[in-house]
Structures are given as C-alpha cells and as structure tokens.
Amino acid sequence: MGKYLHFSTCLFINFFYTYIKCAFFFFLFPSLFLFISSPFSLSHSYFHSFFL
Image 1 (spheres, helix red, strand yellow):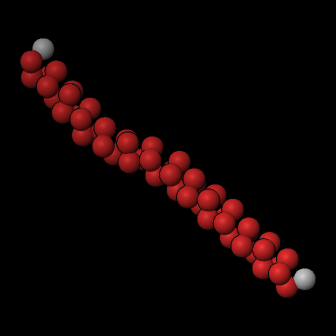
Image 2: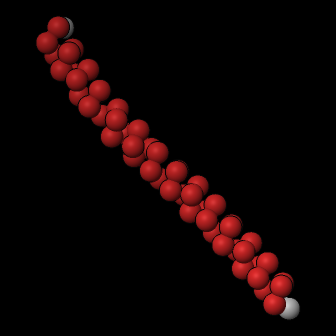
C-alpha cells in the first residue's frame, strides 16, 4: 500500500510539474515574444515615418 501511494504521489508530482512547465512556457513565451517584437515594431513605424 505504501509503495503504491509513493508511486502515485511521484506520478502526480511529475504530471503536475510537467503541466506547470507547459503552462509556464505557453503563457510566458508569447508575452516574451510580444515584449521582444514590440520595440522592433515601434522602431519599424518610426523608420517608416522618417523615410516615407
């Protein structure tokens, strides 16, 4: 019984950790991408306003 409980706890922790990692990746990566691409788009619009 103790071995089964330990196994299920390890499985649950592993699943939970993977879920958190995926959620962290899926929520952080788009915001990071927007954060990185927004200065580029700002500079791009400035570039267009200066040269066009």
